[in-house]
Length: 428
Image (cartoon, rainbow, N blue to C red):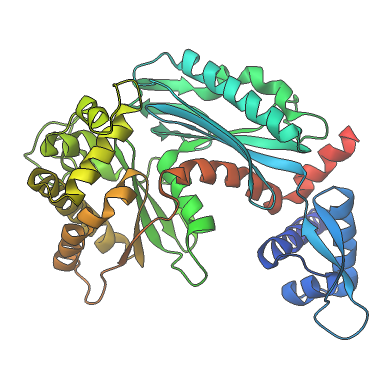
């Protein structure tokens, strides 16, 4: 009958190690006494936990610091700026980006390149991503960092708990197992890194909207901000992620948040998903540019390009520039997109009752012209009195999915430092 006790004790130790790390992460350099007061454990217990985290290389001592009480100052503790780091990567329709983030949340290495990924062979795209990941990992290693894992943001549906992209229509991918293409990255775990049981680098694959929402939750919303919000983002398509009580709502299979395929006009134009009148047909990037009379090539020309640059970005910049200059077609296109967004979001708001709606990705840069009609539709269609959520713009913009990916790895270490500690000891 007494057998379960050790498991319970191990779980308590794991939670308490995590609480110490988060106390230092959130409060900045702190003495043992200050950490003990913050998390409600005895100084002796915190000292034991701290010593273990120091030995594991997850905390460092900075020297004497204020203890928050009387007596001799304690030694200030801080998260290490070496040791484990999170590798985040993003596959976009026209780019590949990889970065490394340390436990303190700082981007320590980053690389990005333009890439025509639409309808490309997944093997070729992922081979190139592997090269960029290797480059970032080497740059991070030069600063004493070893990857604790790789998280990848993709613009498509990812089956929950797997690395399989079921469908990424804007890439032209279907049933693509990312792990099968990245198994050559096994060597990236490095000395003292965590790795899997076979020495491979732990891999997580997730939808870009989900990771953008997590970045918003962890990085983009100040103290006291809502923990219940809908995060709407756009690259070529429109995605959304729902955060309720600080937790991401994934759905049974992991496919929650397909806002772009909510019908706003059921008899509207056919959509690639098989439906008609979906939001993407009115507020998606292609629909917006078409309504404004802008092509990708025209966008590049307006910025003085020669057509060899990132034409999507040029076209969106041209749209914003025309709207800023008062161009009628651009303003009407953005107003219509805002109306469609408001119609789709009103249904989600009535169903979920969030406190906020956050616009991220490409939508963030177009928010000044989208928000008036979007907010008007929400006001008109929200059923609950005084239930219209605050609508805001993400400060993270297009960087949200990439940062969310890297920080998801970092937080996995903070959540379960005991899972990292034994591996470092084996490598010592």
